[in-house]
Image (tube, rainbow, N blue to C red; front, side, top):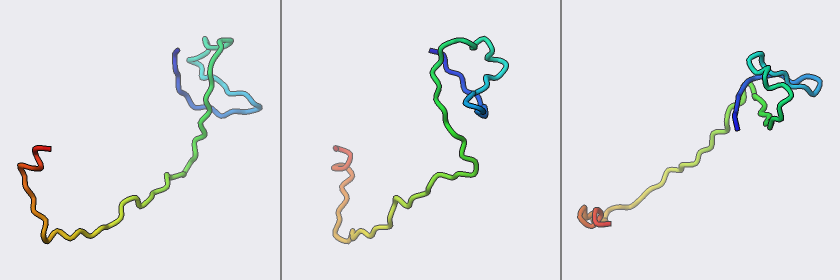
Length: 68
């Protein structure tokens, strides 16, 4: 299967092929339409929250950590 991407503006239920794809006329094709949303920005979510950890009595053993 060969895939080609191009931009077009549908009109009267027709999507025009660019001139370099004229040999694709009358070929069976699979079509996926994706709308360009001009000015649309993806929603930004605050996935990370600030946390507080108490580490006063925490002992870090480098050899034990590397053994895992």
